[in-house]
Image (cartoon, rainbow, N blue to C red; front, side, top):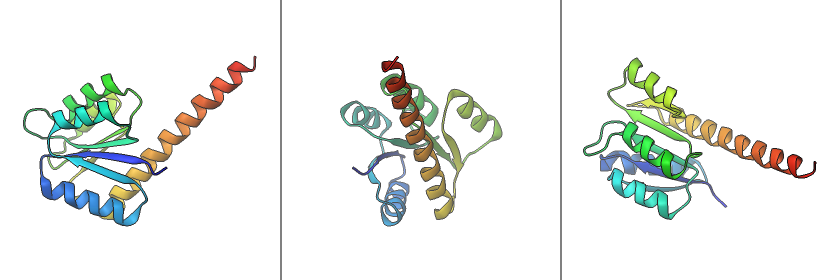
Length: 139
Protein backbone atom coordinates (compact mmCIF):
# COMPACT_ATOMS: atom_id res chain seq x y z
CA UNK A 1 0.00 0.00 0.00
CA UNK A 2 1.32 3.43 -0.92
CA UNK A 3 2.27 5.77 1.88
CA UNK A 4 -0.09 8.69 2.38
CA UNK A 5 0.88 12.33 2.79
CA UNK A 6 -1.36 15.14 4.01
CA UNK A 7 -0.35 18.65 2.89
CA UNK A 8 -1.81 21.67 4.70
CA UNK A 9 -1.16 25.13 3.24
CA UNK A 10 -3.41 28.17 2.90
CA UNK A 11 -2.04 28.83 -0.61
CA UNK A 12 -3.90 26.77 -3.22
CA UNK A 13 -1.04 27.16 -5.73
CA UNK A 14 1.39 25.59 -3.23
CA UNK A 15 -1.00 22.68 -2.61
CA UNK A 16 -1.25 22.00 -6.34
CA UNK A 17 2.51 22.33 -6.82
CA UNK A 18 3.37 19.94 -3.99
CA UNK A 19 0.78 17.39 -5.13
CA UNK A 20 2.17 17.53 -8.67
CA UNK A 21 5.82 17.22 -7.57
CA UNK A 22 5.16 14.35 -5.18
CA UNK A 23 2.77 12.34 -7.35
CA UNK A 24 4.88 12.83 -10.49
CA UNK A 25 8.09 11.51 -8.92
CA UNK A 26 6.91 9.05 -6.22
CA UNK A 27 4.27 6.42 -5.50
CA UNK A 28 2.97 8.33 -2.45
CA UNK A 29 -0.71 9.27 -2.23
CA UNK A 30 -1.25 12.97 -1.53
CA UNK A 31 -4.29 14.67 0.00
CA UNK A 32 -4.43 18.42 0.52
CA UNK A 33 -6.37 21.05 2.38
CA UNK A 34 -6.03 24.81 2.73
CA UNK A 35 -7.70 24.75 6.15
CA UNK A 36 -5.73 23.60 9.23
CA UNK A 37 -8.94 22.71 11.13
CA UNK A 38 -10.00 20.50 8.22
CA UNK A 39 -6.52 18.95 8.26
CA UNK A 40 -7.03 17.94 11.90
CA UNK A 41 -10.41 16.44 11.00
CA UNK A 42 -8.82 14.48 8.16
CA UNK A 43 -6.14 13.18 10.56
CA UNK A 44 -8.83 11.93 12.92
CA UNK A 45 -10.64 10.11 10.12
CA UNK A 46 -7.76 8.63 8.09
CA UNK A 47 -4.25 7.32 8.54
CA UNK A 48 -1.38 9.31 7.08
CA UNK A 49 2.32 8.55 7.09
CA UNK A 50 3.48 12.18 6.90
CA UNK A 51 2.10 15.70 7.30
CA UNK A 52 3.61 18.67 5.47
CA UNK A 53 2.32 22.02 6.65
CA UNK A 54 2.98 25.69 6.08
CA UNK A 55 4.10 27.72 9.09
CA UNK A 56 2.14 30.93 8.50
CA UNK A 57 -1.60 30.34 7.99
CA UNK A 58 -4.65 32.30 9.12
CA UNK A 59 -6.44 30.90 12.16
CA UNK A 60 -3.84 28.32 13.16
CA UNK A 61 -0.15 28.37 12.31
CA UNK A 62 1.97 25.31 11.54
CA UNK A 63 3.39 25.03 15.07
CA UNK A 64 -0.12 25.13 16.58
CA UNK A 65 -1.25 22.54 14.03
CA UNK A 66 1.75 20.38 14.96
CA UNK A 67 0.87 20.61 18.67
CA UNK A 68 -2.76 19.64 17.98
CA UNK A 69 -1.97 16.75 15.66
CA UNK A 70 0.57 15.31 18.11
CA UNK A 71 -2.37 14.91 20.51
CA UNK A 72 -4.22 12.91 17.84
CA UNK A 73 -1.34 10.93 16.30
CA UNK A 74 1.84 11.32 18.37
CA UNK A 75 4.05 9.25 16.08
CA UNK A 76 3.31 10.95 12.75
CA UNK A 77 6.27 12.87 11.31
CA UNK A 78 5.70 16.50 10.35
CA UNK A 79 7.60 18.73 7.94
CA UNK A 80 6.99 22.48 8.31
CA UNK A 81 7.53 24.82 5.36
CA UNK A 82 7.85 28.57 5.50
CA UNK A 83 8.80 31.54 3.40
CA UNK A 84 9.48 33.39 6.66
CA UNK A 85 12.13 31.04 8.02
CA UNK A 86 14.26 32.13 10.89
CA UNK A 87 16.77 30.14 12.88
CA UNK A 88 14.73 30.70 16.05
CA UNK A 89 11.52 29.37 14.51
CA UNK A 90 13.27 26.38 12.99
CA UNK A 91 15.05 25.66 16.26
CA UNK A 92 11.77 25.88 18.20
CA UNK A 93 10.07 23.54 15.73
CA UNK A 94 12.88 20.97 15.85
CA UNK A 95 12.96 21.03 19.67
CA UNK A 96 9.23 20.27 19.70
CA UNK A 97 9.82 17.22 17.52
CA UNK A 98 9.15 18.46 14.00
CA UNK A 99 10.88 16.06 11.58
CA UNK A 100 12.23 18.83 9.35
CA UNK A 101 11.88 22.52 8.54
CA UNK A 102 12.03 23.69 4.92
CA UNK A 103 12.22 27.24 3.61
CA UNK A 104 10.32 28.36 0.53
CA UNK A 105 11.05 28.60 -2.27
CA UNK A 106 12.47 25.09 -2.34
CA UNK A 107 13.90 23.01 -5.14
CA UNK A 108 11.91 20.03 -6.36
CA UNK A 109 14.72 17.55 -5.65
CA UNK A 110 15.22 19.06 -2.18
CA UNK A 111 11.61 18.58 -1.08
CA UNK A 112 11.54 15.05 -2.50
CA UNK A 113 14.78 14.18 -0.72
CA UNK A 114 13.40 15.49 2.57
CA UNK A 115 10.10 13.62 2.18
CA UNK A 116 11.87 10.36 1.35
CA UNK A 117 14.31 10.76 4.24
CA UNK A 118 11.59 11.54 6.79
CA UNK A 119 9.40 8.65 5.62
CA UNK A 120 12.35 6.23 5.65
CA UNK A 121 13.23 7.25 9.21
CA UNK A 122 9.58 6.74 10.25
CA UNK A 123 9.61 3.24 8.63
CA UNK A 124 12.79 2.29 10.49
CA UNK A 125 11.32 3.52 13.80
CA UNK A 126 8.12 1.47 13.23
CA UNK A 127 10.13 -1.63 12.32
CA UNK A 128 12.31 -1.23 15.43
CA UNK A 129 9.25 -0.94 17.66
CA UNK A 130 7.66 -4.03 16.07
CA UNK A 131 10.89 -6.01 16.40
CA UNK A 132 11.31 -4.95 20.02
CA UNK A 133 7.71 -5.99 20.79
CA UNK A 134 8.32 -9.41 19.17
CA UNK A 135 11.52 -9.91 21.12
CA UNK A 136 9.85 -8.94 24.42
CA UNK A 137 6.99 -11.34 23.64
CA UNK A 138 9.43 -14.24 23.25
CA UNK A 139 10.96 -13.76 26.71
